Image (cartoon, rainbow, N blue to C red; front, side, top):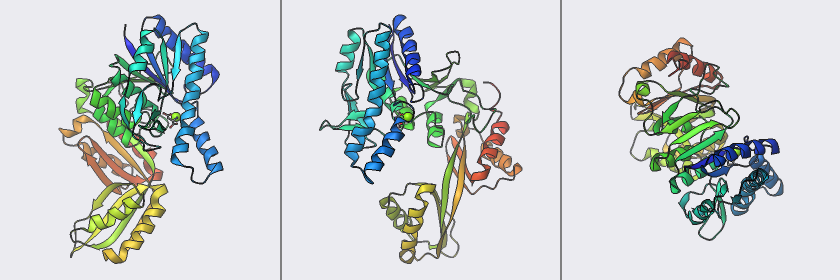
Length: 407
Ligand code: ASP
Ligand code: MG
């Protein structure tokens, strides 16, 4: 009797019909003898609607009340899914995050799971019930409701799978798995059979939206194998995220991620002396600006340029902060480019095989795409390019690295 943790995303539970569809899928597994814990997201765009509603009431709603409000989206779908299973004659119970024993710190809006007390869950499972858990939420030490960050239901599911020592963790979504690139941008993209945690984490943090990066992190730490598959297409096998992906694939680029809405800021002619980076980036952090890629040029006559990227939405705050710092820094000026995107190639093989970077740069050059900035990790190369060329870059790289060919 296997223990399975499943997660159904917002679009999978987006209507009464879809909830009934999910109930039938769970019922089939339960009838086959599996014990099932199902984590659900809020229906469709419910979370966004609740945020709009809150902003209508208050320009800056208290973070604690915001979490109480947002947690209700997931509670609604958990109750409805439980009802749908009852209709099918299945013994089932819905639990909020708190009832399911999910403990977090008290950082509202992006709380971290600190532990899971599985006593109640195990009791319900032992009674033969299917347990439906409201995703994306937990409870602080003071019994206040918390939410764990947008897209957090994935993390709830993987954390529950780890705590319950589940046999599998299955994330059901509206796409057929983890794709070699975003199929909306790149028609040749196809779902991967498997991918390792490191690659998935790099893809998730550089723009692939299929899975919450923190869920992948939790999976890697507790060695939870995660299946990402479609809740609509039962035939599609989906993608397995695990420690070791297919051996023969280890020397290939596995996927391409892209991001839009990136802006670049350059502080020109900064005197090159110790402490300058701290003087620049500490105030940016205090201003709540999250900085991504940072490049410091080699200095010429003791002057250097510092360039960094931020989300487009943070550009105004970044420029304002840096302009205020120019006198203290002794820097000449700040210039910016508001309209950039990022394209990343990811694959474990890059760590040991030379030539990936050269091939990527040549491919972009052949498309006439200018590279604004380059950053790398051991298994990733990211190029910042004009936002209007991001799609071309993804398609050209997909072809250059033969990602359209089956594994
Ligand atoms: N409903 C939450 C969100 O939209 C959590 C989730 O979907 O995983 O961000
Ligand atoms: Mg959602």
